[in-house]
Length: 145
Image 1 (cartoon, one colour):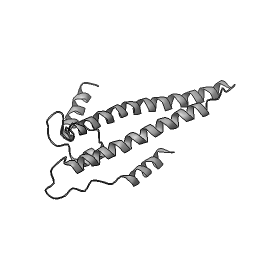
Image 2 (cartoon, rainbow, N blue to C red):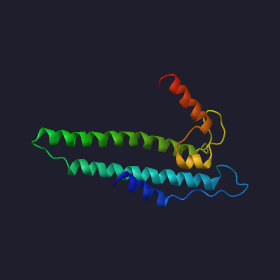
Image 3 (spheres, rainbow, N blue to C red):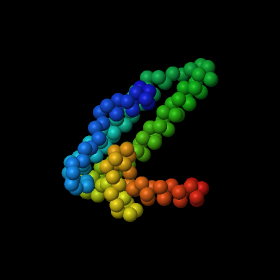
Image 4 (cartoon, rainbow, N blue to C red):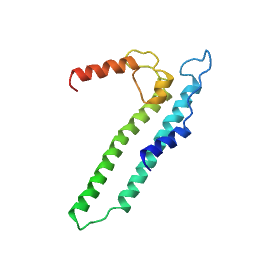
């Protein structure tokens, strides 16, 4: 499935959290909203892993032409690199789920302020508020990282 179709499909199932007036930050409903968001994301990634395994098993041809073989190997290599990035993302999702279980989710690891509902919906695994993330990126840029 092309990336654009996946994003369109994902956006159909996503429902933004609707805050109530005077609602406490990271209450049980918010934590459950983010837990479900992370679990859905994790499920999507696991399904993609399964599709990759099937694809590699079913489409592994031993082409006689070296150019065809190289093209296939390059495609497989790209797919495996993508899965490796997703494996790292799965680890981060699991760490974030642990933070939710420990009631330590939604606050900046650097300064302790609220990260914010909308930022967390955009990047549920975020550990820094916008200001600290911006500062970290500036430092990294200056250090040539």
